[in-house]
Image (tube, rainbow, N blue to C red; front, side, top):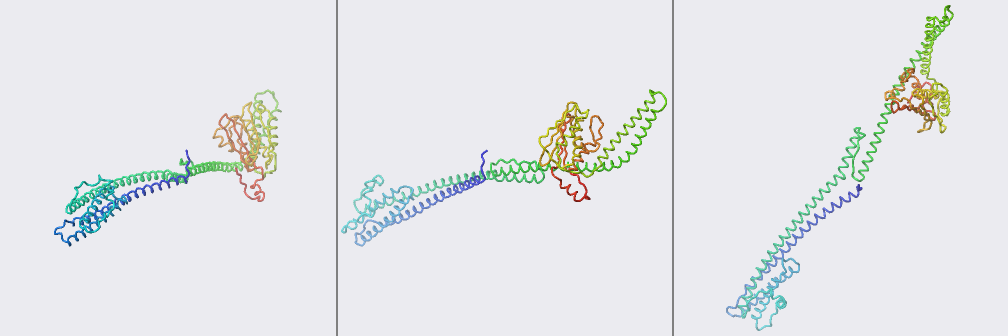
Amino acid sequence: MVRWPIRLKLMVGLCVVVGMMLILMGGSIFGLHAFHMSNLSLTDQLRELGASKDLIEAVFRLHAPRDGSEEERRGLIATAEAARESLTGYFQELKQNTLRGNRANSGLDELGLSFLMDDGLTAVLNELRPEGPAVEPALHGTAYYVNQRPEMLPQLEPASDLASRVERLKHIVMLLPKELHEDFFEILSMSKTQYQASRVIVWTSALMVLAMLCGLMALFHRWVLNPVRLLQRGVRRVAKGSFDYKIDLRSGDEMQDLAAAFNEMTARISLTYADLEQQVQERSRQLVRSERLAGVGFLAAGVAHEINNPLASIAFCSEALESRIGGLPGPADDPDRRVVANYLKMIQEEAFRCKSITEKLLDFARCGDIKRERADLPSLIQGVVDMIRHIGKYRGKSIVFQPKEAVLAHVDGQEIKQVVLNLAVNALESMDAGGTLRIEARYDQGMAEIGFVDDGCGMEAEVLENIFEPFFTRRRDGKGTGLGLSITHRIVNQHHGEITAASAGPGKGSTFRVRLPIHPSEKADARRRDPTAPQVHAA
């Protein structure tokens, strides 16, 4: 997709607006010019028509001498001179109209008639003043015009006397209104043609401007209004909590970049919100688990002390009875004696088993001070691994631990050994013969991390949610007490670390990861400064 920046789109819009203005201005100027030219043509034609009226009136005042008196002759000469002045005025109007181009035609017909009238008036004056000098033509072009354009002159009979010359002159003058009338209608026809052309141009300009305006509005909606509307809708949706809402904007400009940045921001907010929600749920589960552990710890501390004494009495009495039965007279293979001896032995074993459970409860309930110091985790793990490898029931299962670097953490070494032992034994118990447990130690995001990855029976989602609950166990032999992982969780919390469990499903193995601080914790320092402060175990 071709990218058009907003500044380029604004320039295109500005060019469209300028084009609209130019088109409207051109149509308007053409219309005004056509109207102005028509008005000038009509005005000049009216002036020419007015001058022709004066000329006609002056010519028609001429007549042939009636009584031959000197006074009549002078009056006719004055009338002929006035007619010549009117002819000169008409000729000037005709000449100006022709030069300005405000006529419908070239004006040659009117020019020829003017020359003929000038010739006729000159002949009349010369005949009325035979004793004086000859009168020259007023227009100075009659001979040239007669020689060059003879076809434009009307064919008239030659005049032999003054009366015939006057009649011939009047006949020529009467041809002038007809020519002017035809010119006037030609000007009206030309004005009508210009009006129609102006109307076509104005309507075409208006339609073009309307089309350009519609296109500009469409572009404005596409480039400005629609992107702003989509962005506003996206902001409102996000403000209502729809962080997964995406703005699909393909404007090819900075608006599209803004929408992409907005989508990226909402995606990050959604991830952050989901992470916070997960952390809240995890913290809530840890808080509930901590409360349960605290309750179980108080209960275990009281119950274990109360049960240990009766258990010791039961074990002592059963051992005493077993020794007495061995000293009684009678055959040693007596069935009743063997049954009693087996029952007494079973009582001792179960009593010691109960004692072992109470000792674990006491260990679980103890929250003594942890003596943290800088320790090498691979060395601690290796010691636990070497001890487990000598246990007979785990010899068919392999443990892989190959540390690549020294990993130092601020921990209580004995407590962390207990954590490693519990997690390793739990993983080995979940595997069949030939299984492999991989243990790794490394630095990760400013903390020391210990990973336990096995290929054992795996866990379901329900088991993962309750794996650290007290007395919760899914051991296949059914002999687990459900306290090992709870104790492990408590130890890690006391170190201000984190422990997580993951599994792809039943039969796909499990992964436990323990994260421990590599520097002294601020919370531990605070408790060290104020021993009376309450202990808060954070996951």
